[in-house]
Image (cartoon, rainbow, N blue to C red; front, side):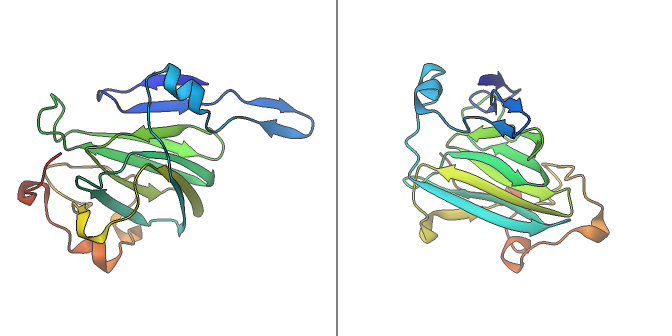
Length: 182
């Protein structure tokens, strides 16, 4: 397993060591000791899974303190563009986003710490996404930012006519209007 730093501090890509033979492959998707060796110290308490079709954009979602969630995101089937937005006001990268293609084929994972909004777009015909969280869902702490916010200017790599967004996500506030912090 290798840990690759990104352009945003504390946001890392996890690349598992994959063992392949005539039967297929095997890899450790999560190993707490190896995470701790790399100073990634979260106690995951729940796994969430979604299934979506091409063009779906989920996000940008987060929970504020005291229910902020760290997420370890991976794809079981298909391909997504995974996006994290730094909302830590004291961070030199506040308001910046990072994106990476995660797929069943590349087996990469994105470790998203507390203080980030998260979302993804589906680039394949369908995708199954699994993510571990270190905090339970709390409706009162739930927040979000519109996926098409002009300040963030995220390229979701999906054509406008393909975009599918939930009613809940389409009414989220813009980045300029958020009034919460970590």
